[in-house]
Image (cartoon, rainbow, N blue to C red; front, side, top):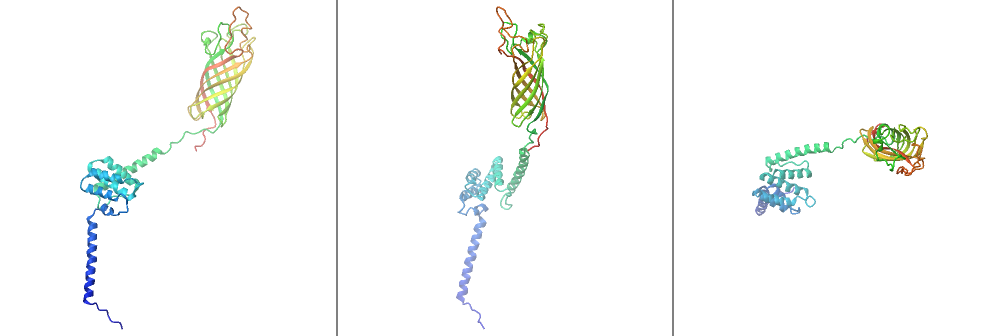
Amino acid sequence: MSRPSVAFPWQRALRSITARRHLALALITCGALAALPPSAAYAQDATAPCTDTVSAAEEAYLNRNYQEAVTLASQCTDRSAFEDEIVIQAYRLITLASLRQGALVQARSAVTNILHIDPEYTADPVNDPPAYDLFISLVRQEEDTEGTADAETEEPSPAPPRRNEGGLFLKLIGVGLSDYTGDLPIGNAGHPFDFQEISTGSGAPYLFTAEIGYEFPSNLALVLGVQTGNYPIVGHSTGSNDISDSWRHTPQLLVRYTFGAAGESVAAYLDAGANVTFGGEGIAGPGVGPSVGGGIDIPLSSTWSFFVESRFNFTLPDNAIDGTSYPEDVQVERPPKGSITGPFDSVNQLLGIGLRIRFGGAAAQE
């Protein structure tokens, strides 16, 4: 049977002294921690950069040196250089000092930065003043509202419906200003912009156009068109020299290239091809030759568009559509010079406007 251990008096005294030392050390440590503000206790971590600066900023704040507190704390807001906890402490002090100075914009900016680092951040209900807690709540609500508004604003608006690539189109209505350039019984050479048709001839210079075409995905289109109009001075040598014989008709086969998405945005186009022009009495006959033109297509909807265009239709032989080949047909002392187009005559659309319709509807949005 073991005997109970007996402590000698000197052993009991040594144990008592040791326990008292441990208790005193514990009390001193707890008292020191309790005496420091929360951020000051945190600042004793010597391993964290900028800790001393944050501590100095808080001391300046407690001493009511608010501008100094802001200046010091602002040195510790670089997230690439310091840990997020230190940065949050710095912004906290900037907020508190800014509120004391009435600098609400600066305070709001600091809280916004805190919430960007830690969206769940809340004030310490024990160590932070109620005004600071309320200010954080207000800024959080404002940020949430702005974020929702930004999300609604940034949501891409529905793109206008794109038409199916390629497709059939019609020029339903086209009217324009007509011009005849060819051989005239005058002493000067004729040209497309001499506007003689306005001052002389039979009737007004006008025309109508129509076309049907197919547009390919490559922006090329094949177009079958017709231009029929009154060219007031074209008939001076046809039939019985009755200038009223002035209507001509011009079917055209054209290849068109469009610079842009016709029917979706304002787009320019150029076309080239061939024509046959006929009409007139007596010695007038059909003429054939090249056609060139261009215009602008302005969308009104995904189906309808407005166009402005010009086109020139040259014909051979020289005496086909007007019955005249100057100066060979006129034996006078000073024969007319004919036209600047030489052996070609031309029936032109100086300016035309109208509407086009495209079929096929709109493609599904991507």
